[in-house]
Length: 142
Image 1 (cartoon, one colour):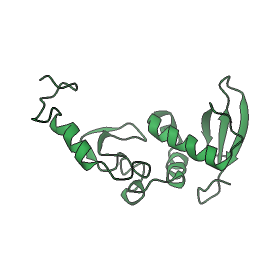
Image 2 (cartoon, one colour):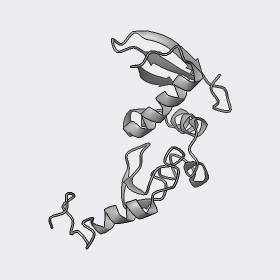
Image 3 (cartoon, rainbow, N blue to C red):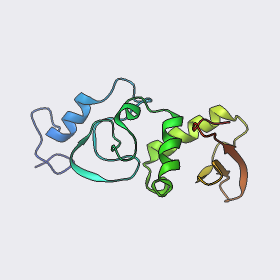
């Protein structure tokens, strides 16, 4: 057991788990996530794999195959407590889309969801709110 993860490596130096992740990774990582035993939205762990890195209770399989800002907003709106458990890759994806939507957002910022008001609050590094981005009932940025 001299693999970095503590599991027995195969001939290629990777354990079976990490080899499967490498082989089964989607061709478009910007649109979906690789196989994972931990949900990127809620952090739930299982013994098997989540095919696209997100469990069914957070996002239907059809949406997790082609992740969009709309599908992420919908998932967080429906389960606001999951936002604090989101993987950094989800947060970075949201931030990238917010910057595309509004170029005036500073380089470093934090976000918070307000599902009741259907807004994403944008804060600077000092915690001062600098902007809001609203979304509609179809979970599209407006």
